[in-house]
Image (cartoon, rainbow, N blue to C red; front, side, top):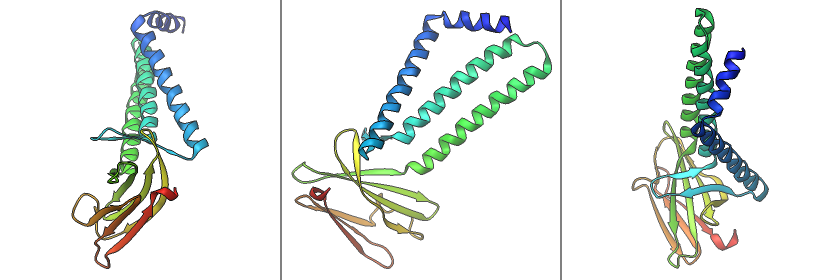
Length: 203
């Protein structure tokens, strides 16, 4: 046990390890603050980087990923100090389970994340955001208004759900248009079309 403690002390004395540990802690604190702001304000964190939307679940997965890396790092240090076969086997199995859990959590978050589409009004004053979540052949749309670069306000949840069409926003299954601050979307579906209208000034 003393040898393990000494090895950890040596590792923590390394500048690179201490810097990475500090950066990890800063990341956790920042995500915690974003979570608190979201809960207090009722807004939803979402940053549009054109090629990807960064959302809070994705950032939380970052914490899971970091925790897994540090856990594997700590276990690998212990693994190097153990000479007996059984403790080494237990540690190896634990590392494998951590990797499996991390991958599984990433898949769950990826399935739940959905795809975001943003539409800017003609005068540039309003931005409507639609998230499309597709599972098998079931598609659900959620409507938001972008408040700023970092947060969305939910307008309506599950404003359109279908179980037999698949993707809607990515193809020719819908049309969108603006009338001032009024955002309109028409969805062409087998029993449609369905038209939805939202005045973003009301939210």
